[in-house]
Image (cartoon, rainbow, N blue to C red; front, top):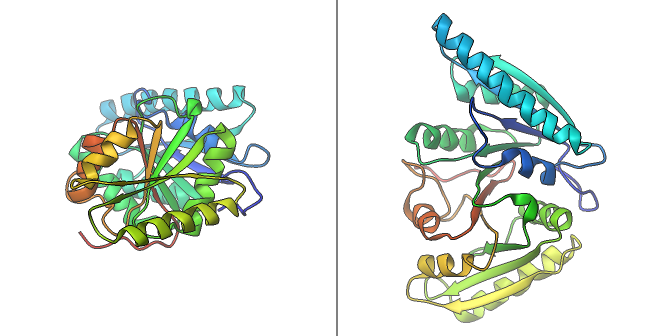
Length: 272
C-alpha cells in the first residue's frame, strides 16, 4: 500500500469479464493507481473446458482486456493485460495477484449468486487489499464521499480515502447514526477522531451526526447527497451467504449512490 505522502496504489489488479464494464472498474482503477509510478493489470480468467466455449470466452475476454488497457493508456497510465486459464475464477485471480505482486484487487459486484460467492471467497483468501465496487455513476466524476463509521477507521482505509479524495478533489464526510449501538458522546468522539486521523493524510473531512430508530434506512437517505459510500468488511459490514447479508444487504438496498467495500491487507473477516 502507498505511504502517506504518495498518491495511489503501486500495482492494481482488475479482473474483467467477457462483456462490458457495468461497474466502471477501469475508471476507478485510474483514480486508485499512483499516476507517477503505479500500474494496472487487467486479467480475464477462463474456466470453460469445452473447446468451442473456451475459444469464444477467450476471444471476448481478450477484447475486454484490450479495451480497458487502451482506456488507461490514453490517460497516460501504465497498464498491461493477461488471459489466464485456471480451475476456477477464484484460483485464477489469486494466482495472478500473487505473480503480479498486487497491492490491491479491484472487482465489481452484481446481484448474481455466482459473483457473490466469488467476492466472498476473494475477500477471505486474498493477501492484499480488496476493493469491491458497485457503480451508479462514473467514479471519476465523484464530488462527495460518505463514510459511515461504527469503529475508528483503520489506517489502510484512511489512506485509500485520501487517495480518492486527492485524485478526484471530492469531499469526505464521516457519518454516525445514533440510535443503534453506542451513545451520542461516543459517536461524536468517533467522528472527531476520524477527522483528525484523515487530516494526517492531508484531507480535511466533514462530519454528519444524526439520530434514527432505523440507522440503515437513515444511511440510505444520507447517501442521496453523495456520490460514493465507503464501507468496511468487519463488525457488521460483511458479505454473507448471498451478495449482501444482514447489514450490508440492507445498506446496499437503501443506498442511492455507488458503494465501495474495502478490505485492507491483513484484515481477518468474521466467519459467515
